Length: 78
Image (cartoon, rainbow, N blue to C red; front, side, top):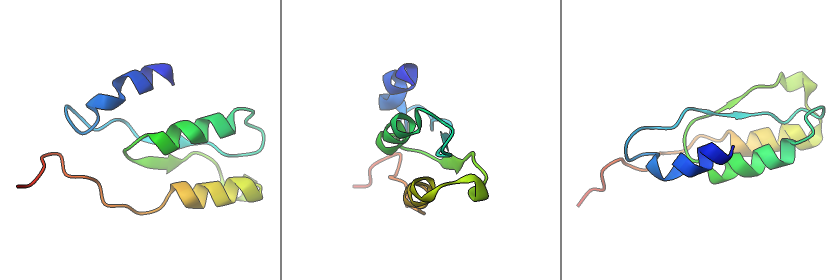
């Protein structure tokens, strides 16, 4: 994840970063850390887990992270 943070400033300037994979199932020990990273990242988000494998926290977090949004334009309009 550190290397992704180092390239984050280039997102939307030189390319669009790859999708951020949301992993929130209970068995993943670092799921809170992964979610914090994804919350700070821009770009496409995809869910890696089966919905029926999620606990309440995972389901609520997936719903919050996977909302439809309008991306910022690559070139600011005048």
